[in-house]
Every structure is written in C-alpha cells, then in structure tokens.
Amino acid sequence: MIGAANPDESLEVTVLLRSRAQADDAKAKNKTATDTEKAAVESMLKQRAAERQHLTREQFLNQRGALQEDVQKVEEFAHEYGLSISGSDLAKGSVALTGTVANFSKAFNVELLNYESPNGTYRGRTGPVNIPSALDGLITAVLGLDNRQQARAHFRTHQPAITSHARTTQPAGTFTPVQVAQLYDFPTNADGTGQCIAIIELGGGFKPKDIQTYFKNTLKMTPPKVVAISVDGAHNKPTGDANGPDGEVMLDIEVAGAVAPKSTLAVYFVPNTDQGFYHGIAAALHDTKYNPSVISISWGGPESTWSQQSLTEFNTLFEDAATLGVTVCVASGDNGSTDGVTDGLQHVDFPASSPFALACGGTKLTAANNKYSSEVAWNEMANQEGSTGGGVSDFFAKPSYQSSANVPVSVNPSHFVGRGVPDVSGDADPVTGYDVYVDGQASVIGGTSAVAPLWAGLTACINQILGKRVGALSSLVYLQIAPVNGTFHAITSGNNGAYSAQAGWNACTGSGTPVGSAIVSALTGSKSAGKN
Image (cartoon, rainbow, N blue to C red):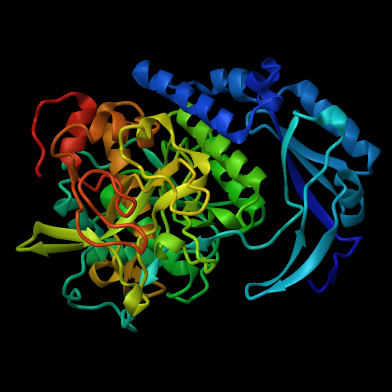
C-alpha cells in the first residue's frame, strides 16, 4: 500500500442486480453460493432434457433480466450519495454509476487505497463492500471499486521459437491448427458457416495484414472474417511484442479461424480488471449484431485471487450463457496443479472452474506419418515451459453432471467436494505446439490458451451440423458424449503435479482429447463409429 486513493478521482462502478427469478423467490437472498449453484445445475439439466431448447432473448429478459423497479431503487440510493447513473441494462442486470472516490467510499462504506505491485500501481480495497439494508438481496455485486489486474494469458512460447521472418519449413514435432484438427478427426463437412465465435482479450491486438499472411501463405486458406470490438475503452492495440499479449490474441484467432474458417471471429478487447473482464463476456453474450454461439476465453487466474462476488457473478453470467445456448470454452491454466500459487496448496484456475464453462486442459501430442500416435498430460515444468492446470475447486461444489466422474475431494485441508477441472483437453505443450504467425514473425506457441479456441472452433462446426446451438457442452461431455465409446482419446500417462492422468476422467486432462467425428455422432444420435 502506497497511500490513500485520490478522493477527487472519478470512476465508473458497475452494480449488478438480482434476476427477476430471484426477485420472485422470497428465499433467494438466504441461499448460499452452493445452494444457488446446485439449483442452477438442476435448471441446466432440465433444459438439456428438453432437447436443448434454449431461451430466446425476449424469454431471457422476462426470466433472468433485472427489474426496472430495482434499477430505480439503485438510482435513489446513488443520488443520495452524489453519484450519477451513466447507464443501465435490464438484460445484463447492471447499473453503471459514476462519481468520485470520496462519494463511492461513503456510499459503500469502503476504504480505497493505492497499491504498488509487479504489474504496476492500482486502486484497491480490503474488506467487504457494504450496502444499505433496504437493498439487501437486490444488489449482488459491485465491480469497479478495485481496478487491479485480474487475469493472465494462458499461453506458452517454445524457446527458441521466434524468427525474424516467415519460415520456409515447419519446426519438427509442431503442428498447424489444421493439422491438429485432422489428427483429432474433426468433421470435414463443416467450416463454421453461419456461426460467430466470440474471443475475449484482456490486452494486445492483431494486425489484419498478419492474419492475411498466415492464412494465405501458411495455411493456404481464405482468411476468416475478424472484427475488433472495443469494450470500456479498450482497443485492438498490437504491442509489437510477439512474446507478449499479441501472442495470445493471434493464437486465439489463428486456431479458431483455422478450425472454423467460415465463422465470424468477434474479438472483444477489454480492460484487464474484474469489471472489464465481466463487461467483455456480457458484451459478447448480449451482442445482437454478431450473436455469438461460442465464447472462447484464454485468460484467468487462481480462484484464490478472485473476490467471492466475482466468482459468484461470473458463474451466473456463464449460466446465462447456458440458458441462451452459448458454449463457453475456457483455458484451465498453464502452471500445473498449484496454478502458480506458492502457498503449499493446490489451486484451480477461474473462470475455467465455473460449472457452466467447458474447462480445457492440455496434452503433449505426437503423430507419425500424419496420423494420431499418442498423448500424455502436458508437463514441461522442469523446462520452465508450463504444465496443464487441473484439480478440484475450493469454491464451486461438484455439479450433478460430474456425479459419476470419480472426481476426488480436494487434497487441500478443507477436503472440499468440488467441481473437477478440466472437462476436456487438447494439444498444449509448446514443444509440440502450434505453428502460428505473430507481429510479422513465425512462432511456435502452446498452452491451454490454444485448447480453448480449438474447442470453440469444433463447437462452431458442431452447431453448424446440428442446425442449432449445442449450449452447455460442459454437462453434455459427461452425460451424452463421454459415455459413448470412441469419443475421446483417453490420456493415461503424465501428471500436472499433485494429480496423475489415468483411465476415465482425471484432474490433468479431464475426459481426454476429442475424436471430432465421434462427438458429432454422439450429439446427433448417429450410429457411425468414431476412431479410438
């Protein structure tokens, strides 16, 4: 802590409100996060039973949107403390307040201080955010008082990997995203036509020329349509550093675009704060122009670094996505079972640990004669090149859909019966990584950051084949896909630290890596067999 925040500093804070369904439930305000999560999962399973008939936007607003009368109560509260209303959105259940640090400190009875960290200075708080008793149960979160950096990109660059120009030959043992899709037997009769994949980025940017060069010269493909969308003042700003956030942005675009080249890639650039991250996902989910059917997220951080309100509200946002039929694919992290925390405990990465996210872990993939050969759980920690994240959540209870997955209790002292991470996997080891192109340079990049857009691209193709959105793929993996023989390559070797790969679900690679054609068959009810 380096001092008090400037009392005259102006800021915008997001107040999140209860849904109409919660307002109708007189007991909602007394539920714990676990109770709410269990009810949410049961709701999701009922939707699945109804053959994935998801809510229309009008139905969503009527069931899960906020009440105008709640917005008015917040406005009255805001005016009492000299705060202004800069906007509200019933579908997103949010009210934006503007004012000074001094007024917000009084309104929510918090002390805002300035801090210094390796990532720079930020405005932060400690302790709870307090609200008037009249608004108890009405306000579910207050985001924006704290603007510390919230997440990190989950990609790893294989060293030496960067060259000053495009390579004429592909490094041995590496793959283009197209080759990975072929090895995983992705459907060849789909290209993402009619779909939009939303990609959330908390930094960096892309150069359209690089995208054109990569797809035309390296992949010999027509480049996909890529649009940049600014959220909260963040923009597509390439840094020129291929080892920085530009590597994340280009990896996401090039992997998703290679798998589903006819889909639109909508890239939402957002500030790296919990408020900005939330706004970016909400913007994608409620984007009626591009209407994404899949959201790919390759950023996150250990659960222990998130506030309880953020964990709860991001999870609710992903539940909103499930009700609208939007699949959310999230990287599970690149720092093994500790997720990079040095407190002696094991940690999973969030938002991958949300029960409504498809958590994507990593493997080391090898091929022979352009055919699938073998895989092990990715762990190159000895070479300082990362390891797949995975383990058991210390916050989210084990969802019903994992009841038969043999998820162990947490190895931490709490022995919490939590959500198991990841659900699925894909090639992530930078040694067998993806041949990509960043800031005018050829590069090999790995990390679970590559697996989220890989699964997002596959999901877009599945949606195209189905003719409708697959929705909450996280539950379908356990209830409809994995029970069918041949839908996954089982990963039974390797570890990520505290957990080892083994037959069935495991906390390194989940259910395994995809056999795309067999997954499509499982979801369509086709009897065609997949490869094992």
